[in-house]
Image (cartoon, rainbow, N blue to C red):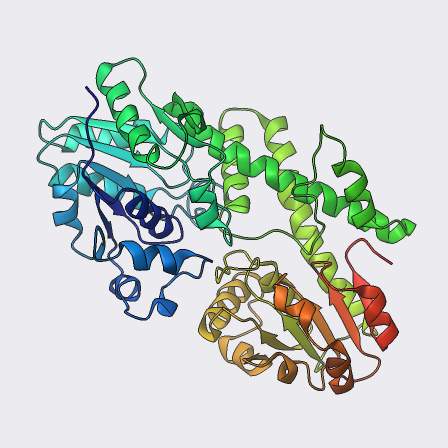
Length: 472
C-alpha cells in the first residue's frame, strides 16, 4: 500500500525550493509543506506581508504564495523540527561549481548536500523518503544513502531523484503544466516502488499520470545534466552561426526561422544572443565534462566543453565589438546597459552575460551605467566585485563603485551616453520612446542589441547606429 504523504519538508528556500513547494502546497491543501533555510533574512522575506518583497521575482509566484501561505505552506528556520515531523524531505540546496581542490572549476561542490544528509540522519526518528531536488552528478544518491545508512539509527531511508526542469521567468507555469515530472527510485524493492508511488501521488494532484515518468535513480540524475547540455548546445550552435552571418551578410533570425521550420529540429532555443547565463547551464555542462573526464571519456568531455567555450566567445565578442565600434577605446566613455538579469522576468543574475560584458569594458576603463527593472543595486555591485576579483586583479572594489552607476529611470541612464547595450530581453525595452532616448545621446548614437529584440530598421530611421547579433 502506497504511503500517503501528509507532511513535506524542503531544505532550501531558493529559486527551486521556494516556487516548487509553493505550488505543491497550492495544489495539495491537505499536505503540510514546510520550507526551511538557515538564512534568516531569506525566510523573513518569504514571510513578508508585502508579497512584492519575496526574495524571488517570478511571474505568478506571489499569487501562489498568497493562496497557500499560512494555510499549509510555512517558511521557517527551525530545520530540525520540520525534518523530524516530515515523511518526505526534499533537498534543494545550492550545488555550485567547486572553486578549490580536485575538480576545481568543473565538478559540483556537494558539501551542502552532504550537510543536509547528515542532519537528516541525525534528526530522523522514523522512516523518511529523501528526495534529491538539487541538480546533482550521477551516482550522488549512492553517497547520500551511505551517509544516511551509517549515521542514522535504525531508520529506513528511501532515496528518490526528482530533478527540476524549470526555466526562470516561467517557473510557475512550468510547474503547473510540466512537460514531464521525472521520478527516479529503486525499482528492485517494494519499499523503493512505494516511495516512488508516494511522490507520484503528490504530483498527480494536478499533473496527468502519463507525464509522471519513473526511472532508476541514476538515469534520473543524468537526465537533468543531459537536458541542460542539449539546450545550451542549441544556443551555442546558433550563436556560432551568428558570427558567420555577420561576415556573410546573412540574417541569423532568418536562418533560425528556416531551420526551425524543420520538424526534426524545431524552433525552440534558436534565438541568437549575447550568450546564455543562469544557475544551471554552465554549471551542469562543466559537471558533465568533469564526469566524462573522470570516466576516461576525453573526446566526449571535449565535445561538451566546446559549448562553454563558444558561450564565453560570444560574450567576449560582443564586448570587443562595442570597443572596436567606438573607435577602439571606451576609456572614460559612458556605456549604458539596459538589463542585468540573465533573462527577462527574473531577478536572478547568476552567470548573467551582462556581468561578463561589463567586466571586459571595465578592464578598458569604461563608465558603465545600468538599468534593470528587478535587480537591486547591491546585487549588481556584488556580481561585479566577485567577477573582477577573479579575472582582473587590477580593478578594486572602490574602482568598481566609482565606474559603475545604477539607475531607476531608463531615460536618465541613457542621457549623454556614448552607446546603449541591451543585455536582457525585458519586454519594456521595446516600448520605450527611442526618439527621446536618441535625443539625449552623444552623437553618433550607438545601440548594441544583444538580444535582437529591437526594430533595427525603425531605429536606423531615427538615426541610431545599430548593431545586432548575427545581423548587418
